[in-house]
Length: 246
Image (cartoon, rainbow, N blue to C red):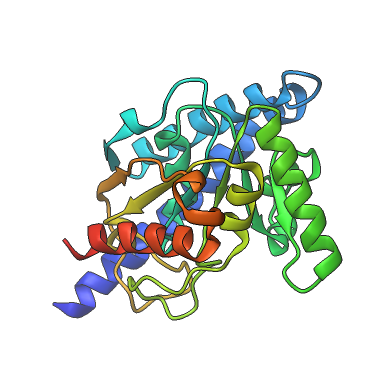
């Protein structure tokens, strides 16, 4: 029985990969033509949103979002979701209602199609092992917020142990929030780990289903004495962890 489950999971994983790359190739001409000029942020967001919706339909993943009203029209945020699945990035574009810059590790510059957005300034690469370039990344994030876009950061930085357990948060997202006095919006991806984790984890299950997402109320830096970065980080952490434990 377990063998059958692993076999079906492998077939679905392979199908998922085919859907991702084939739809990416279909969208690529539009990315190359439209993601330019003064409207590139809007076009990039709308195209990625459509691409994400297409992928979810074809791989039979339904997205159910609770708390979407916590995004106030016209406001910019530092968006902080938990991260344990490759679905997280795809589904982000179906949850967040307006343009945002995604801060991703610099390794994504090696990924085809995805690297286009980082090279054109839509998203921001994070060079974790260079202090100088890390500071440049923070400057670009602050600039995006001042220009009316939101910024999305996975505060865990990534995952290594293929675990649903929430890992310790890094400070980057909270430094940006404090220095720009921008509200943090925590997001909990409740079931993404159960649907699709690491593409190389062939012993793990991978299946279609419902991706349940909770958007929490904004947490404002000015609610903390002296803009206490640690308190802001801890409240965001416990907000997401509490929802994961339900």
